Length: 503
Ligand SMILES: [Zn+2]
Image (cartoon, rainbow, N blue to C red; front, top):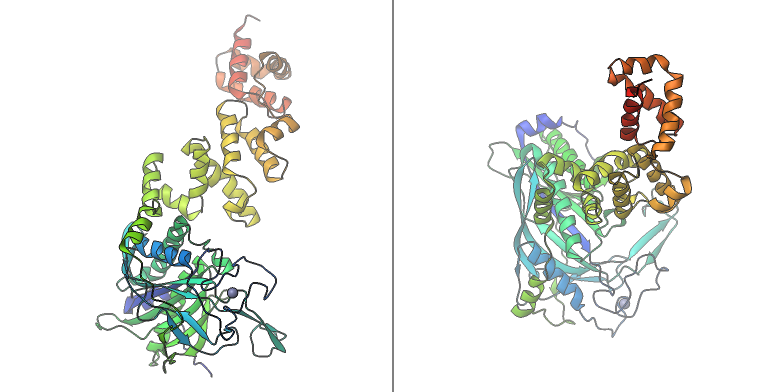
C-alpha cells in the first residue's frame, strides 16, 4: 500500500482553518500479583514462558476464574473518574487470530463495561477542560511476539519469530474518553495534560505502576479535524502505542498538520490506525478501519457475570485517597506558591520530591530551591530525570538542616551533595570524611584575618577610614585561606572589630 504524502500545513495555519477533535484510549496494566483469570505470576522480567498455565495458554478443558483484586482496582479507577459502576455486567469473548494470543480469542468487555460515563478535569493555561470518560473496562493482555532477523524488528523480513506468553492474561484496564471538541490550538496540550493527570490519578490509587516507558501505561490517540464553521466532525485516525507524554502531544500536532495537508490538496482522510515514530515525530499509515473487523463478540460462557454489590462499591469508595488535583491545591496553599511556581514544580517532575523533602524536615522554600536549582541543573547535565538522581529527599532535607543551623554554607553544601551523588554515603558521613564544616571558631578565623590584613594594608586603611564595603576583599582572602569553610558573616564582624581597635 502506498500513501500519498501531501505537504504538511503549518500548525497555526491549520488551526486557523480547521477545528480538531481528540479522543484518547489508554491501556493500564494493573499491578495485581496474579493474572486476570488464573494464578500465574505477573512479575516483570521472568524467564520467557515460565509464568504460564493451562488457563492462560488456553488448553482445552481449562476454565478461567476472574481476579477479584483486578475487579476492585477497576471499580477504584471508575469511582475516581466519576463513573457509574454497573451493578451487573459480563465479560465478552473477542474473537481474533494472532500468534501471541494462545486462546485465539481475548476475554474483554464489550457492550457491558464495568464503569461508564464519567469525567476527569485537566488544567491547561489556567483553564479547566472537562474530559468526558466514555467507559472503563477490564480485559486481559496478549502475549508478546519477537521477530528475529530483518532490520526493523517487524515481522516483514524476519527469519523467524518467538512468542512469550508470560504477558498473556495480565489484567488490563482500558480507559476510553468521549470525543473532546472545542480545544482549538490547545488540542495537543490538552491530550498531554489528560494523560498526565490520568497517570498521576492512577498512581495515587495504587492500582498500577503507570510506567509509560515499560508499557504499563499505553496510549492510543484519536485525532480528526473539520473545517471551522462546518458544524461537522471529520474522519478520525487512531495513532497507536504512543509511549511518552511528549509523544502524545507531538502525535496530535502532527496529525492536525498532516490531515490539513490532505484536505487542502482535495484528498480525504482515511479511517485507519497509524504508527507514531519517536525519532521523527511523524505518523505512518497502519491498518485501514474502513471495513470494520468483525470480532464476533459474544458473552463469555465460561465466566459468571460480575455483580458488585452497592455495599462493596461504597467500601471501595471509602478507601479512595486524596486525588492529585486536590493534593496539589492543598500543597500550593500550604507552601504559599503562585500558580506559576506550582506549574514549574510539576513540569520539572519535582512535586513529590519537594513534598517528601518538606516531610523530612526542610522548609518548602529550601526544598524547592534545591530541587529546582542545583539538583535540576545536575539532572540536566546528565540528561537524567530528577527523580532518578541518586539522592533521596531525606538527604536533601539533612543538607538543608545543616545549612540552616550554620554548620554548612551553600558552597560546602554543594560539595556535600557532590559526595552524595558520587555514592560516598550520607550527608553526615561526607561532612566527616571530607572534613567539611563552616569555620566559625573565632581563634581560627582571627589567624586568617590577621594574615589577610597584613597582606592587604591599603584595603585595611580604606576600611579604617570608614568604607566598610571594602571588607569584601578581606573576606574573600579569608575564604581562600580556609578553603571556603569560613563563616562569612562572623568573619566580617571580626574584620570590622579588628580594624576598629586602636592600632
Ligand atoms: Zn496462567
